[in-house]
Length: 454
Image (cartoon, rainbow, N blue to C red; front, side):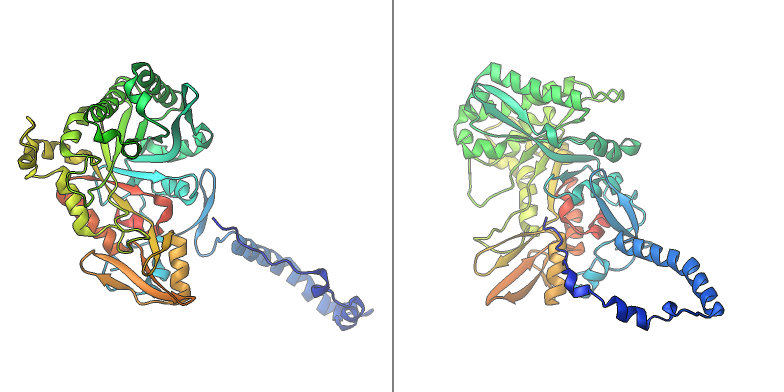
């Protein structure tokens, strides 16, 4: 996050001739009016405290909102008596003025849930706003996953890194009134061959993760490993692929037999991160409906990464609605049984059973593309800054069902795709149609009124 620059003035810029000032001031005359002196005394008594309060309000942004504190950072909150639905803001023909006027206002009723299935919210240490959003909107989530841990090999031993990021005070604030559950993300890093093929190493990995959950009071973990296995070619080898799935099963079993330390007699949970559908048919790196059926008894949720459809090499929408639909159909298809005739699993039945465990990914970030290729992701405050600077016309893409706008800078043409109330609302409807939950990457990157939709 860029630091705010504060201009420093040289002393010479503000030097005032003291003799000249004394000559001009009526209060430096040897004989002053008693009436005037009396009035000045009452001005000092009443006006100074008022000016001090106004100065404090300006400094801490207390007007017109209120100042609240998260565990690490403080944010300005301007609550609204009406939700975005009641204001009529969930529409395709928004203007940049409406976005700027409303984006940082959230509905005062932060405990009401429009989306009642499982909702997992990711929080990252490098984007601190998410910590505060997790506290303020905790009633909107069933699970919060701070991105804290990495499982690495150091020499011949496995070690769990990231404990320095774990914040017990923040966890306590998020968990007020019992919800949501906190499952930090654990990413597997480094070569996974020995971890999968050696029983001793697998056991060590399970013990490290379960022990950390108990010691830190977590409710389980979110495991990110599939992309690492794909990068090392693990999934192309049938035997190693089966070992990878076995790793997920055994870790889930270990977590399910352990209990949380909050005295509520809950088992620890496992959420597994899985990739979205890509354009390569029969790609061995894909996570299939058969894979999901195999590990489902040991996994409480599948965090489906339905975002990043486009890239700097292929600018376009973040998550076209048709592609999101195809990703869900790939994992929960009525037609999947036709593609899986060589298995003994009734995929039609499994689809209905597993839908509630799939957490459809929603991005709270956007992309500022430089056409024809280039650019970078942007966060909410950067998006608002672009709107203020360029005052663009917002366009609605009927095919992808996302908003975008164009602008030019330094002879370069830019196209910005960033989520809107309408685009998010349509994806929530898609999730409800399939009976799946949500996983949000990540809540510190979005605009505050997005949370009204949840």
